Image (cartoon, rainbow, N blue to C red; front, side, top):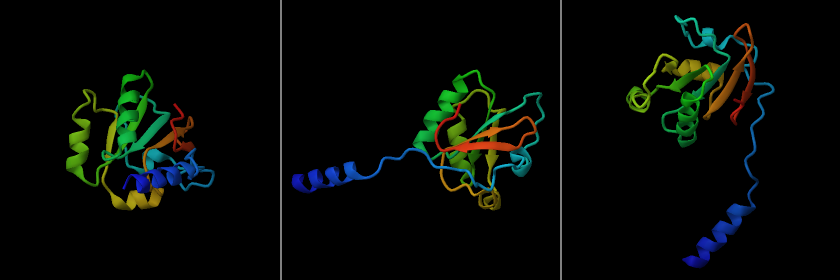
Length: 137
């Protein structure tokens, strides 16, 4: 058994390392994201950073916690297809005003959201100017 595990570890170590996924042709680029997700911003906050997260993603948990403690104005768009998991996850945060529950599967398909987290930068008009699989803020 130890021999098998040692061999498996060696094979895993030889796999290419994940760096970042390129989104140069992603369908969200150039779209007004807040309009696409039907987010009615009733506050005076102007968001230029968005993280699309899943409550089942460990990396997302770390990033959302880190970003809620920062002074940046970040909008948190969460996968709420399982509303119970989503609600459980956001209960740990005091200010939920900048959290958006996205529960329409068609929107996920339309925006081509296949994994998490996705870090999004919006330009001054609210259009998506950059996406990354690694934190860009």
